[in-house]
Image 1 (cartoon, rainbow over the protein chains, first blue to last red):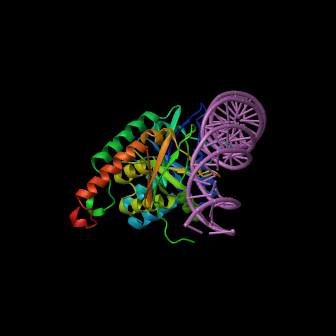
Image 2: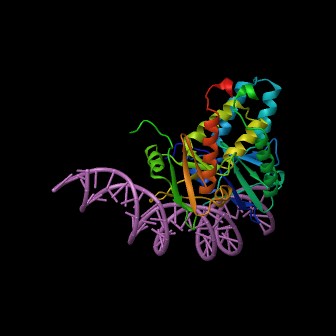
Image 3: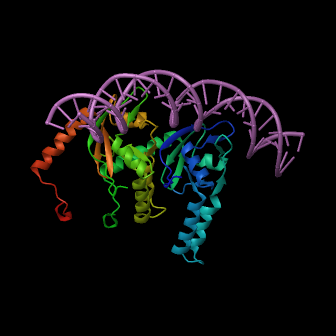
Amino acid sequence: MRKVFLFMDTVINKVDAKGRVSLPSDYRAMVKELSTEIVCYRSLSAPCIEGCLEETLDKLAAEIENATDFFSEAQDNLTNLVFGDAKRFSFDSTGRILLTEKLLKHAQITDLAVFVGKGRKFQIWNPENWAKEEARIRAEAMKNRPTLRKDAQ
Amino acid sequence: MRKVFLFMDTVINKVDAKGRVSLPSDYRAMVKELSTEIVCYRSLSAPCIEGCLEETLDKLAAEIENATDFFSEAQDNLTNLVFGDAKRFSFDSTGRILLTEKLLKHAQITDLAVFVGKGRKFQIWNPENWAKEEARIRAEAMKNRPTLRKDAQ
DNA sequence: TTGAATCCCATAAAATACCATGCTATACCA
DNA sequence: TGGTATAGCATGGTATTTTATGGGATTCAA
């Protein structure tokens, strides 16, 4: 039994005519080991699909409750945005999930999908869009080294 | 059971036609004792591969979550950069890992790989590049003594 | 009953595990 | 201390398993 569960690596898979994509085998292994499910939703900030484990959304729900007031408009909006869009995806015996039209359209994905690990989450991109995005992020990191010191941000 | 787990020493191993390299036996022993796995990614600052234990990345994930907001661009960029590039590597019964094309290309490694201990991390270099880099670092350290005082940096 | 979703089977390629060998470093003994 | 035996290691090769992906069959629901 492994100790660490992180979505990593970048893998590119085909999307067939039916809209099926193989989930990277690493991701599947995690889902199976934790006996949970994958949840996907449209990214709020980029033209890509975002995915995570159900547990992660559960934690997010708790955080939202903690950070915003029960009756606040902020909590209302946030929960609508996140949970209104999220959907559970299970994979078949060969490890494929069936993405929805809504998600594919948002990410401009047609026949190829790039899975990008983000630790507790992952993203699914159109290959060209991801290439541009990665170049942008790396260039920025070269210019200004990332930091985790709060005072430096 | 040992108390200290540090990647040390510099060892050079062959990379075969399939891209397989023996992980230094010291490293393997650590990984086995901790029953964990190795993670590798392209160094952000040098033409080499960087590696560490899964736990190290897990801690980093927690730190990122702690230092940045769930919906922030900073968290987005950082997690893409780090985890999109990282990949788990398990070794076979003879202690070899299969490096990817992307990593080998970034480090300009063809048939020989130098493993350089870095404590919590290690690096994998092309032998010639490492020779140059080591000379440079040592020369610099001779000229300006290293310091750990924050105010001096 | 028609379209969509799910399941199952087949195949090729890639990743992984396994076996065998020569070498090196270590341990052991005189 | 010197020499030998032994265990561990690096490395080449092969076999086996897993994975991605296409296509067809079956089920489910509108």
